[in-house]
Length: 331
Image (tube, rainbow, N blue to C red; front, side):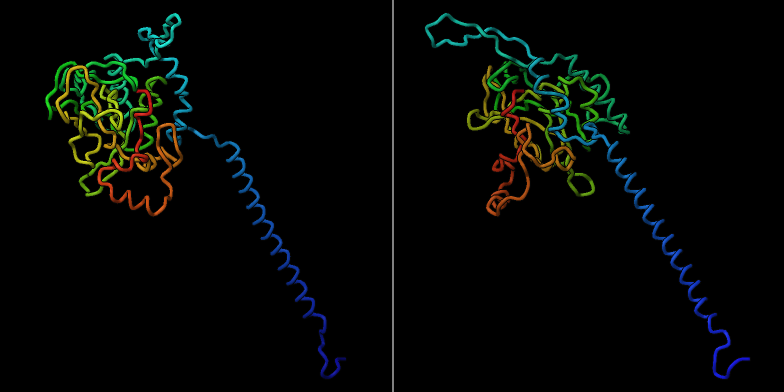
Protein backbone atom coordinates (compact mmCIF):
# COMPACT_ATOMS: atom_id res chain seq x y z
CA UNK A 1 0.00 0.00 0.00
CA UNK A 2 1.49 3.30 -1.11
CA UNK A 3 2.19 5.89 1.44
CA UNK A 4 0.73 9.33 0.92
CA UNK A 5 3.25 11.85 -0.56
CA UNK A 6 5.84 9.20 -1.51
CA UNK A 7 6.74 8.30 -5.16
CA UNK A 8 5.49 4.83 -5.95
CA UNK A 9 8.40 4.15 -8.40
CA UNK A 10 11.38 5.86 -6.75
CA UNK A 11 14.08 4.05 -8.86
CA UNK A 12 12.62 4.46 -12.39
CA UNK A 13 13.91 8.00 -13.13
CA UNK A 14 17.49 7.38 -11.94
CA UNK A 15 17.67 4.22 -14.05
CA UNK A 16 16.49 6.10 -17.20
CA UNK A 17 19.05 8.81 -16.71
CA UNK A 18 21.77 6.22 -16.22
CA UNK A 19 20.92 4.35 -19.43
CA UNK A 20 20.79 7.56 -21.44
CA UNK A 21 24.16 8.67 -20.07
CA UNK A 22 25.78 5.36 -20.98
CA UNK A 23 24.43 5.52 -24.51
CA UNK A 24 25.59 9.10 -24.93
CA UNK A 25 29.06 8.19 -23.66
CA UNK A 26 29.34 5.30 -26.09
CA UNK A 27 28.25 7.46 -28.98
CA UNK A 28 30.73 10.17 -28.01
CA UNK A 29 33.59 7.66 -27.81
CA UNK A 30 32.60 6.22 -31.19
CA UNK A 31 32.58 9.64 -32.87
CA UNK A 32 35.90 10.60 -31.26
CA UNK A 33 37.50 7.31 -32.37
CA UNK A 34 36.21 7.76 -35.92
CA UNK A 35 37.62 11.28 -36.17
CA UNK A 36 40.98 10.26 -34.74
CA UNK A 37 41.16 7.29 -37.09
CA UNK A 38 40.45 9.46 -40.11
CA UNK A 39 43.09 11.98 -39.02
CA UNK A 40 45.67 9.24 -38.55
CA UNK A 41 44.81 7.70 -41.92
CA UNK A 42 45.07 11.10 -43.63
CA UNK A 43 48.40 11.84 -41.93
CA UNK A 44 49.74 8.43 -42.92
CA UNK A 45 48.65 8.94 -46.52
CA UNK A 46 50.26 12.38 -46.56
CA UNK A 47 53.49 10.95 -45.16
CA UNK A 48 53.46 8.20 -47.78
CA UNK A 49 52.91 10.81 -50.49
CA UNK A 50 55.85 12.82 -49.17
CA UNK A 51 58.02 9.70 -49.09
CA UNK A 52 57.14 8.93 -52.71
CA UNK A 53 57.39 12.54 -53.95
CA UNK A 54 60.24 13.00 -56.41
CA UNK A 55 61.39 16.44 -57.48
CA UNK A 56 61.29 16.64 -61.28
CA UNK A 57 63.68 19.30 -62.54
CA UNK A 58 62.02 19.23 -65.97
CA UNK A 59 58.70 20.19 -64.37
CA UNK A 60 59.78 22.54 -61.57
CA UNK A 61 63.47 23.34 -61.95
CA UNK A 62 64.85 26.86 -62.18
CA UNK A 63 67.85 27.96 -64.25
CA UNK A 64 70.37 26.76 -61.69
CA UNK A 65 68.68 23.37 -61.36
CA UNK A 66 68.61 22.91 -65.13
CA UNK A 67 72.24 23.98 -65.46
CA UNK A 68 73.35 21.48 -62.82
CA UNK A 69 71.18 18.66 -64.17
CA UNK A 70 72.64 19.13 -67.64
CA UNK A 71 76.14 19.35 -66.09
CA UNK A 72 76.84 22.34 -68.27
CA UNK A 73 80.25 23.10 -66.81
CA UNK A 74 81.47 19.64 -67.77
CA UNK A 75 79.59 19.54 -71.06
CA UNK A 76 80.93 22.88 -72.25
CA UNK A 77 84.46 21.83 -71.31
CA UNK A 78 84.22 18.60 -73.28
CA UNK A 79 82.61 20.18 -76.33
CA UNK A 80 85.32 22.65 -77.24
CA UNK A 81 87.48 22.83 -80.32
CA UNK A 82 91.20 23.13 -80.17
CA UNK A 83 92.14 26.37 -81.87
CA UNK A 84 95.49 27.42 -83.31
CA UNK A 85 98.38 27.00 -80.95
CA UNK A 86 99.31 30.15 -79.04
CA UNK A 87 102.40 31.20 -77.14
CA UNK A 88 101.74 30.57 -73.46
CA UNK A 89 104.87 32.32 -72.21
CA UNK A 90 105.98 34.80 -74.86
CA UNK A 91 107.62 37.19 -72.36
CA UNK A 92 110.00 34.65 -70.87
CA UNK A 93 113.37 33.73 -72.21
CA UNK A 94 112.60 30.03 -72.09
CA UNK A 95 111.64 27.90 -75.02
CA UNK A 96 108.18 28.71 -76.35
CA UNK A 97 105.44 26.41 -75.13
CA UNK A 98 102.50 26.19 -77.50
CA UNK A 99 99.17 25.62 -75.75
CA UNK A 100 95.91 25.27 -77.68
CA UNK A 101 93.22 27.66 -76.40
CA UNK A 102 89.90 26.16 -75.36
CA UNK A 103 87.29 27.41 -77.79
CA UNK A 104 83.62 26.54 -77.86
CA UNK A 105 82.31 25.08 -81.08
CA UNK A 106 80.89 27.28 -83.81
CA UNK A 107 77.62 25.68 -84.88
CA UNK A 108 77.05 24.60 -88.45
CA UNK A 109 73.95 25.44 -90.49
CA UNK A 110 72.68 21.91 -89.89
CA UNK A 111 72.92 22.45 -86.13
CA UNK A 112 70.88 25.65 -86.35
CA UNK A 113 68.32 23.84 -88.49
CA UNK A 114 68.04 21.11 -85.86
CA UNK A 115 67.52 23.62 -83.06
CA UNK A 116 64.90 25.48 -85.06
CA UNK A 117 62.96 22.37 -86.12
CA UNK A 118 63.05 21.03 -82.55
CA UNK A 119 61.46 24.26 -81.36
CA UNK A 120 58.69 23.84 -83.96
CA UNK A 121 57.99 20.32 -82.69
CA UNK A 122 57.90 21.36 -79.03
CA UNK A 123 55.43 24.15 -79.72
CA UNK A 124 53.13 21.75 -81.60
CA UNK A 125 53.20 19.37 -78.62
CA UNK A 126 52.35 22.29 -76.33
CA UNK A 127 49.22 22.91 -78.40
CA UNK A 128 50.44 26.03 -80.20
CA UNK A 129 49.14 26.33 -83.75
CA UNK A 130 52.22 28.24 -84.82
CA UNK A 131 55.66 28.97 -83.43
CA UNK A 132 57.55 32.25 -83.44
CA UNK A 133 59.92 31.01 -86.15
CA UNK A 134 59.17 31.36 -89.87
CA UNK A 135 57.88 28.22 -91.52
CA UNK A 136 58.27 26.83 -95.00
CA UNK A 137 61.83 26.66 -96.31
CA UNK A 138 63.39 29.16 -93.94
CA UNK A 139 65.25 26.68 -91.72
CA UNK A 140 68.92 27.54 -91.46
CA UNK A 141 68.54 31.17 -92.51
CA UNK A 142 69.66 33.82 -90.05
CA UNK A 143 68.72 37.40 -89.23
CA UNK A 144 71.88 39.18 -90.43
CA UNK A 145 71.61 41.87 -93.10
CA UNK A 146 75.35 42.48 -93.48
CA UNK A 147 78.31 40.20 -94.29
CA UNK A 148 79.84 38.72 -91.14
CA UNK A 149 81.87 35.85 -89.79
CA UNK A 150 81.86 33.94 -86.51
CA UNK A 151 85.24 33.90 -84.81
CA UNK A 152 86.69 33.63 -81.33
CA UNK A 153 87.47 36.79 -79.42
CA UNK A 154 88.08 37.92 -75.83
CA UNK A 155 84.63 36.70 -74.73
CA UNK A 156 84.52 33.46 -76.67
CA UNK A 157 82.54 33.15 -79.87
CA UNK A 158 81.68 36.49 -81.43
CA UNK A 159 80.40 38.16 -84.61
CA UNK A 160 82.86 40.15 -86.72
CA UNK A 161 82.13 42.45 -89.65
CA UNK A 162 83.75 41.41 -92.91
CA UNK A 163 82.97 44.70 -94.68
CA UNK A 164 82.64 48.32 -93.61
CA UNK A 165 79.18 49.18 -92.24
CA UNK A 166 77.70 52.68 -92.35
CA UNK A 167 76.10 54.22 -89.30
CA UNK A 168 72.37 53.48 -89.08
CA UNK A 169 72.56 50.30 -91.17
CA UNK A 170 70.29 47.44 -90.10
CA UNK A 171 72.71 44.70 -89.02
CA UNK A 172 70.57 41.99 -87.44
CA UNK A 173 66.86 41.31 -86.90
CA UNK A 174 65.16 38.63 -84.79
CA UNK A 175 64.21 36.34 -87.65
CA UNK A 176 64.88 32.98 -85.96
CA UNK A 177 64.08 33.85 -82.35
CA UNK A 178 62.23 31.24 -80.30
CA UNK A 179 59.60 32.62 -77.93
CA UNK A 180 58.35 30.96 -74.73
CA UNK A 181 55.31 32.13 -72.77
CA UNK A 182 55.80 29.71 -69.85
CA UNK A 183 58.61 28.04 -67.97
CA UNK A 184 57.07 24.71 -68.94
CA UNK A 185 57.61 25.40 -72.64
CA UNK A 186 61.18 26.48 -72.02
CA UNK A 187 62.02 23.37 -69.95
CA UNK A 188 60.47 21.04 -72.51
CA UNK A 189 62.53 22.61 -75.29
CA UNK A 190 65.75 22.20 -73.30
CA UNK A 191 64.86 18.58 -72.58
CA UNK A 192 64.56 17.79 -76.29
CA UNK A 193 68.05 19.11 -77.08
CA UNK A 194 71.39 17.34 -76.64
CA UNK A 195 73.11 18.65 -73.47
CA UNK A 196 75.72 20.71 -75.34
CA UNK A 197 73.00 22.60 -77.23
CA UNK A 198 70.72 22.91 -74.19
CA UNK A 199 73.60 24.45 -72.24
CA UNK A 200 74.15 26.96 -75.03
CA UNK A 201 70.46 27.91 -74.91
CA UNK A 202 70.67 28.40 -71.15
CA UNK A 203 73.49 30.89 -71.66
CA UNK A 204 71.90 32.70 -74.61
CA UNK A 205 68.27 33.05 -73.46
CA UNK A 206 66.88 36.31 -72.08
CA UNK A 207 63.51 37.66 -70.99
CA UNK A 208 61.54 40.59 -72.41
CA UNK A 209 58.27 42.37 -71.76
CA UNK A 210 55.62 41.94 -74.45
CA UNK A 211 52.68 44.33 -74.83
CA UNK A 212 49.47 42.62 -75.96
CA UNK A 213 46.06 43.64 -77.23
CA UNK A 214 44.47 43.53 -73.77
CA UNK A 215 46.61 46.51 -72.78
CA UNK A 216 48.85 44.56 -70.41
CA UNK A 217 52.50 43.55 -70.77
CA UNK A 218 53.68 40.01 -70.12
CA UNK A 219 57.08 38.40 -69.62
CA UNK A 220 58.33 36.07 -72.35
CA UNK A 221 61.60 34.18 -72.67
CA UNK A 222 63.51 34.48 -75.93
CA UNK A 223 66.50 32.75 -77.50
CA UNK A 224 68.00 33.53 -80.91
CA UNK A 225 68.40 30.28 -82.81
CA UNK A 226 70.93 31.69 -85.23
CA UNK A 227 74.45 33.20 -84.96
CA UNK A 228 72.84 36.30 -83.46
CA UNK A 229 73.33 34.50 -80.15
CA UNK A 230 77.09 34.96 -80.59
CA UNK A 231 76.81 38.75 -80.37
CA UNK A 232 78.72 39.80 -77.27
CA UNK A 233 78.02 42.67 -74.90
CA UNK A 234 79.74 46.02 -74.81
CA UNK A 235 80.58 47.87 -71.64
CA UNK A 236 83.32 49.90 -70.01
CA UNK A 237 86.01 47.83 -71.70
CA UNK A 238 84.37 47.34 -75.08
CA UNK A 239 82.56 50.09 -76.97
CA UNK A 240 79.03 49.55 -78.24
CA UNK A 241 78.95 49.76 -82.03
CA UNK A 242 75.32 48.56 -82.34
CA UNK A 243 72.13 49.80 -80.74
CA UNK A 244 68.67 48.34 -80.18
CA UNK A 245 66.01 50.29 -82.07
CA UNK A 246 62.72 48.73 -80.97
CA UNK A 247 60.27 49.65 -78.17
CA UNK A 248 60.90 48.25 -74.73
CA UNK A 249 57.81 46.01 -74.64
CA UNK A 250 58.22 44.54 -78.12
CA UNK A 251 58.65 40.98 -76.87
CA UNK A 252 61.21 38.85 -78.68
CA UNK A 253 61.33 41.21 -81.65
CA UNK A 254 64.70 42.98 -81.77
CA UNK A 255 66.66 44.97 -84.33
CA UNK A 256 70.33 45.94 -84.10
CA UNK A 257 71.50 48.97 -86.10
CA UNK A 258 75.00 50.36 -86.46
CA UNK A 259 75.49 53.03 -83.78
CA UNK A 260 78.40 54.47 -85.76
CA UNK A 261 80.50 53.64 -88.78
CA UNK A 262 81.98 50.17 -88.30
CA UNK A 263 85.15 48.99 -89.98
CA UNK A 264 85.69 45.53 -91.40
CA UNK A 265 87.23 43.24 -88.79
CA UNK A 266 85.52 44.85 -85.80
CA UNK A 267 83.57 42.66 -83.41
CA UNK A 268 79.89 43.62 -83.32
CA UNK A 269 78.71 44.38 -79.77
CA UNK A 270 75.47 45.60 -78.22
CA UNK A 271 74.24 46.65 -74.77
CA UNK A 272 72.43 43.72 -73.14
CA UNK A 273 70.10 45.96 -71.16
CA UNK A 274 67.38 45.20 -73.72
CA UNK A 275 66.67 42.06 -71.68
CA UNK A 276 64.58 42.01 -68.52
CA UNK A 277 66.01 41.53 -65.04
CA UNK A 278 65.76 38.65 -62.58
CA UNK A 279 62.03 39.00 -61.80
CA UNK A 280 61.41 38.25 -65.47
CA UNK A 281 62.74 34.72 -65.01
CA UNK A 282 60.98 34.46 -61.65
CA UNK A 283 57.65 35.28 -63.30
CA UNK A 284 58.17 32.23 -65.51
CA UNK A 285 59.08 30.07 -62.51
CA UNK A 286 62.71 29.83 -63.59
CA UNK A 287 64.48 31.95 -60.98
CA UNK A 288 64.09 31.53 -57.22
CA UNK A 289 65.71 34.80 -56.26
CA UNK A 290 69.20 33.61 -55.35
CA UNK A 291 72.40 34.56 -57.13
CA UNK A 292 72.82 32.16 -60.02
CA UNK A 293 75.40 31.01 -62.53
CA UNK A 294 73.82 33.42 -65.00
CA UNK A 295 74.68 36.60 -63.11
CA UNK A 296 71.08 37.01 -61.93
CA UNK A 297 71.04 38.73 -58.56
CA UNK A 298 68.71 38.29 -55.63
CA UNK A 299 65.77 40.64 -56.24
CA UNK A 300 64.58 40.58 -52.64
CA UNK A 301 64.05 43.60 -50.44
CA UNK A 302 66.64 46.33 -50.71
CA UNK A 303 67.09 49.65 -49.01
CA UNK A 304 65.14 52.76 -49.94
CA UNK A 305 68.12 54.36 -51.68
CA UNK A 306 68.37 51.44 -54.09
CA UNK A 307 64.65 51.67 -54.84
CA UNK A 308 64.96 55.39 -55.60
CA UNK A 309 67.87 54.72 -57.95
CA UNK A 310 65.86 52.02 -59.73
CA UNK A 311 62.93 54.40 -60.16
CA UNK A 312 65.16 57.00 -61.78
CA UNK A 313 66.37 54.57 -64.44
CA UNK A 314 64.33 54.50 -67.63
CA UNK A 315 66.10 51.86 -69.71
CA UNK A 316 67.57 49.52 -67.10
CA UNK A 317 71.17 50.46 -67.93
CA UNK A 318 71.65 52.02 -64.47
CA UNK A 319 70.53 48.79 -62.79
CA UNK A 320 73.24 46.65 -64.30
CA UNK A 321 73.44 44.32 -61.32
CA UNK A 322 69.89 43.15 -62.05
CA UNK A 323 70.44 42.12 -65.66
CA UNK A 324 71.57 38.69 -66.89
CA UNK A 325 75.25 39.46 -67.34
CA UNK A 326 76.18 37.29 -70.29
CA UNK A 327 79.40 39.27 -70.79
CA UNK A 328 80.91 37.29 -67.91
CA UNK A 329 80.36 34.03 -69.74
CA UNK A 330 82.09 32.49 -72.69
CA UNK A 331 79.56 32.36 -75.50
